[in-house]
Image 1 (cartoon, protein in one colour):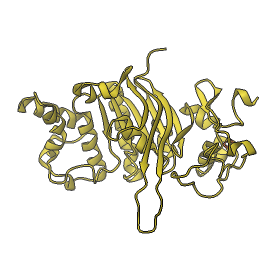
Image 2 (cartoon, helix red, strand yellow; image 1 turned 135 degrees about the vertical axis):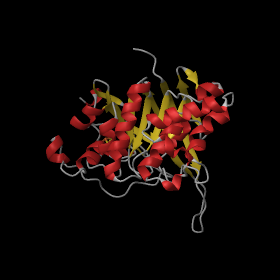
Image 3 (cartoon, rainbow, N blue to C red; image 1 turned 30 degrees about the vertical axis):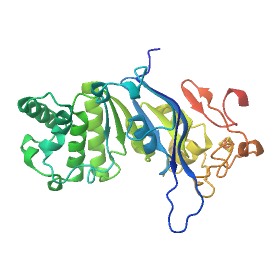
Image 4 (cartoon, rainbow, N blue to C red; image 1 turned 90 degrees about the horizontal axis):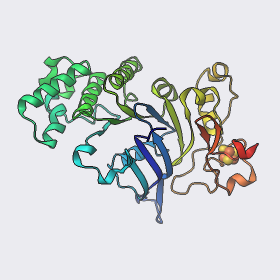
Length: 322
Ligand code: SF4
């Protein structure tokens, strides 16, 4: 098997709790708590979970936008901290909110041109050629180059954001909920655009979403996160055909019609998601799991293989449970 493009080993990031008027005592939000994963060149690796599960924090730590506490992040086998500036420019991000992520005072041309200007060494003519090529690629009329972000719809703004992320020929792009702020009718257009661009440029994506339908549509493999940990990872089709972890089963069975369509049992989640400041000992999911046993509250389950390329962290699944 070839070396993965990205390898993350036992990554941890805790954020200190912000003290509000009624908070007391110190603590840390366990945003990313021992995450390991690999992303192969050319694939789309989906990352799914409820809001606050740590998926966006994980992506920001991977891209170096937030400093890690511990763990390894290797890009083509090299620690990302030791990558040169030009190598780092190969790792980019498409942000969630196309309304907030674009500078309202800059014209489209300048927004897309910014990475070239920061990198330096490009003439105005070269930058102009690159920006116009990128506008063509994402389906924006060249005539829009002198307009400002407020003159565009949400879908068009996300196209501008994608064009900016494609500047400087990246190889690896984290798409952080890139369609969640858009109308449903526009979402498919942006997902198809991302897929077409991936094929054309040979890109690798990490695609983050809380929406299982969106993740299924675009991903080759999917990891499910819960309270700072990955609890299941699999080929996309296997995850939906035979979810192994009770949390994944609960997420899938909550999709309208999924119980009949996917032939899975309805799994009802109990209670609320626990605080990431004080996550449960043992299995993180034990306070909400309908199948929890005594040991689940004290012994943390390891990732076990449940099928080819399919792993889940639950005491009840995998080889040792047979
Ligand atoms: S380890 Fe126990 S609590 Fe956790 S998902 Fe499995 S059965 Fe449920």
